[in-house]
Length: 181
Image (cartoon, rainbow, N blue to C red):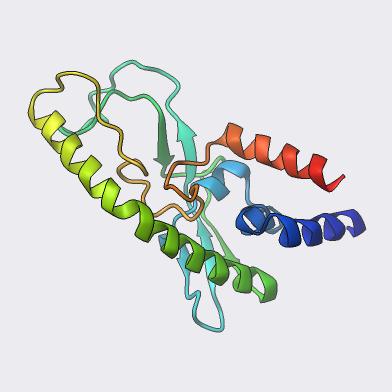
């Protein structure tokens, strides 16, 4: 516990942008649950009894095969990242937030909102290009939308709106451990 506290103090001082992301590990959130957390899963952040509801996770499609039962007319091939609407155990957990967790999530939300103001105008142009691509029967490469459609409300995104994938999260964690000694 002493080492964890020392490391988290170092994180807060030196890696404040990612501090909240790694702080939530201490609540027992799995990596995919943290990265799949949306602001809709955080209830009452501005009240005296906020909670996080863990009901989904960030996942990667394991196949490029079509599954027509899951596709809508606007969906793309089932590749890349998506929000899986259940957890590893398929059980919904409700976690009450206290003290430092609330303070850090509130601070993180302010950073997130500032970042969103920067990437949202570009994203709207990307969405328009994507809709045109879909309407034209998928000719050429699919236009990229950042953050991806359906993931714009993720709590943890890069400042430019890109996803933080499970591998990127691992790499960041190892880097911070090395930097902190």
